[in-house]
Image (cartoon, rainbow, N blue to C red; front, top):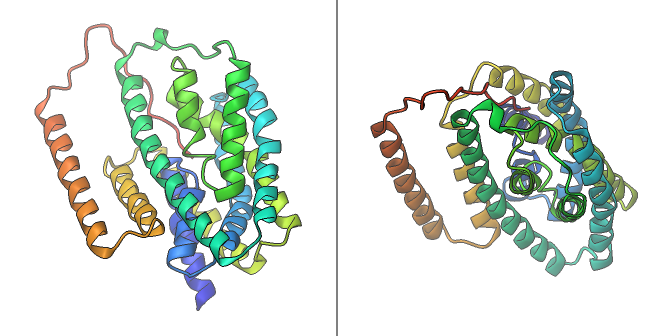
Length: 303
């Protein structure tokens, strides 16, 4: 029965990954820790192994559509691959004591808060894509090598330590470094570079024995069809309410990992709901007629 619930969880997480493009680590790891009582080290390790199998599904779509900046992938991977393995080595050096497990929960909570901020910025950039003329974008901007390498190192360490970052943190840094890239190219580039990144982190955890193969296998049984179905649905357009719901779930998970009480969680949800209501009301009250000569880009292809 426990395996069945894990598989059903895998279906839900995989579907959200395919629908929104948000990395599975931001969803799966906190679910394993908070709902299934898995210790943080095992949750991070098992989630990385499952993510390694899921990543190529979305990456293949973007490679076929040509929405991948290959040079960026190379420079990101040059920093993220060794950094991810180093993140695993740091965890191993710290050990698996109760204090380390608690510290890892806090680190995961902080990573989720940063991821929520990243989702907000990503949504803003997506609106920018619809309002700017296509000629304002550059499909092949010059690569800022040192800065891109630094992003890879940062993202690699975060993924190695918490499994969060390849789909929710690094893309924010890429948006800031390369504002002329369309969102679909940013997403495609991030997905492709995440394959060697997650592979490096997963290899480290496999070598050092934190992975529970039964757990990872149960997750994959549901995640693979889930991510495929989510990608199919996203190609036809998604509800504008999906991401706000996802943000609420991530905020709740982050708050719980950081030790928030039930009352504090209720206040947080209330504040977020009130803010979201104001934003929605303002958006509906404004005219949405584009300026003359402004063409709308195609919907973002997420995986």
